Amino acid sequence: MIILRPRTNLMWGRSNRAVVICATAVVMLVMTSRLFSSVSSPEDISDEQITEEQMRVLRAFSRFAARDQKRGEKPALVYVEKKDLSKSPARVRSDALIGNLQKICQNFNVTIPLTAFMLAHMHFDHKRQAVYCFTPKVACTSWKRIWMKMTGIVKPEKDLAQLSRYTIHTSIPTMASMGDKVPEMLAKYKKFMFVRHPFDRVLSAYKDKLEHKDTESSYNFHKEIGVRILNKYRTRGLNYTGDDVTFPEFMRFISEPGHGTFEQRNEHWLTIHEICNPCAVKYDFIGKYENLKEDAHYLLDWLGASNLTKEFPVSDRPFHAKRYEPKYFNQLDHKTKLSFFQKYLLDFAAFNYTFV
Image (cartoon, rainbow, N blue to C red; front, top):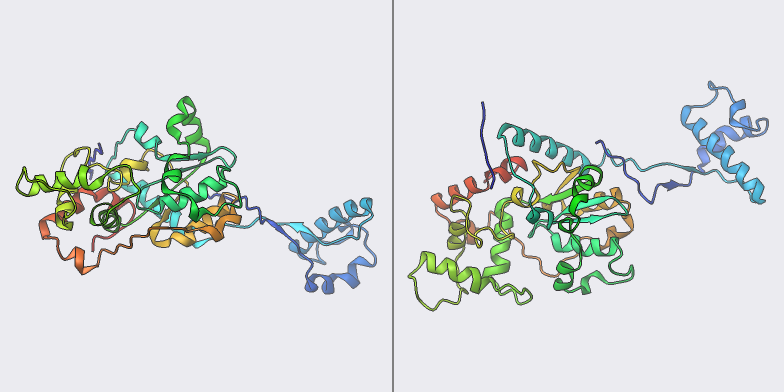
């Protein structure tokens, strides 16, 4: 349960594309005639003659030239430069979001214990020392597909779009299986998660699980949840199938105050704080569904998996949801809207989302 008590890295990426071949005409024209004809090593050159950047290039040239000469190869002007990801718009947005999150967690004195349920929503990659906390209806299927290829669960040449949803959601190990290794992993590994506007997320869940028929899921949402909703808000005892739950009925059901029942706390619409617990787990990057492609590409660079950027995002069942859709939002009365806002207040505030 979330307890609210209101009161009055810079991370450098290790991209596999960090090797840059520098043999520019400008450098050669400026320095060849004056330097290469009479100088055997960069140390013979006065600092006043060249810039610091040129000095770095020449030192690299000297080092690689000596190596190539031993091999009998022609020297080449080559140096290694790491890609600076710290100035990426995705990183800037994430840093600002994390700063806002920390203020909200502190000001509201949020206390949420780390549970096995939360750990079961965290995938890990020992090779890259990374942890991804997934939230349903926030591109988690797309991320899991990428994760399977990134961690070697599927072969590099595998077409990710051909992976069945059952395979995707049952083949990746989670932190819940790591036992006493969890604290060390959470302390040392890179950790990231994605968020989405609360209303868009629950609308997507309604469309996916109750308005449409999810034939691939082993859990019958219409029977297990739809019927309960109809018995709660309509005449009890009728032979409901759960196929015609309205959006206002669904919103009223998930927005009731208190801890909620098992059905009300289904992971597809449970608050993100109760899934990934960002007030307790210090995430290094928080991406937004609204910037999915750019944030995902940044993350893959950051994780050293930039070769997979062209394969993300992939989705075989996108349920587009916008809170301004009159068909849905205008069905809700003021009381239901207010109840929903209060229920998801922490997600709204911490992730910097406005209600309207």
